[in-house]
Length: 116
Ligand SMILES: [Zn+2]
Image (cartoon, rainbow, N blue to C red; front, side, top):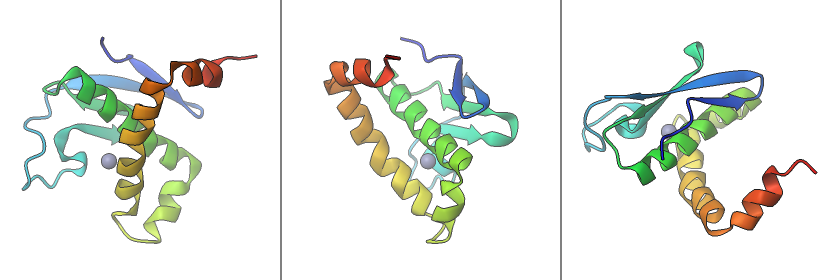
């Protein structure tokens, strides 16, 4: 399944792009998120490395969405007061487990996304 082309976060409508971001998870890679994805708030864009598996794409998209949520809510600035890696730690800790809970509990997803 392809990722959505846009994601609404707060008042923003982020474009979601599949892009060739090169190799991923190289231990020497100093790019944020090791080349799996990028969150670019200045252009309201989330880029996903098209070279990853579909299940990894979902994880990366949720990861970048969480970065965007922290940025929009101001939590990103608060986390920077701890240290430069606090945001990455929080986002990484939440992403996999949150995705796992959502995948294992479709009735929870239905309840959370229902409008009444
Ligand atoms: Zn990240």
